[in-house]
Image (cartoon, rainbow, N blue to C red):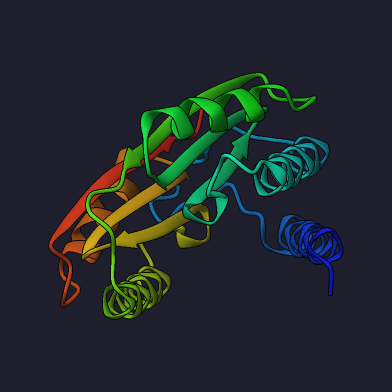
Length: 192
């Protein structure tokens, strides 16, 4: 298969999954009964389209290792998180995202990678990421589908838009309790 075809299939699949999520799973009430700032279905679909376009643009840019960058959008505000090799990649990712129609602002929460990782580190990090995601899903206090998890050498980075500070605190507590986690970075934001 050629690379362009794979990128197109990936973008289409992501768009479909996001639209299914928005249509069927979107809620504005958290575990405390408080409501988040409301968004319309149209806004959520627009945000999904922006997210997909940003992800596709990052995948197409040869200077960016986009598989380690997470993209989330809320009311046109794009949050970039994850790990990049250098400041140039960080700046390039923000520039690429900013050029996408519908992007109203960039919230750059990316971190610089440390030393190179081995295959063993990548496997261990994948296991930690899976455990953190499972623990977040199992916790009723957290709307975990809005939280992205990236792990590098045992360092977990949580990002995304959540309803309130209590969800942030709970997510951090849950992630820190997972075996193998050496540090938890908070890049989450409360929905506006």
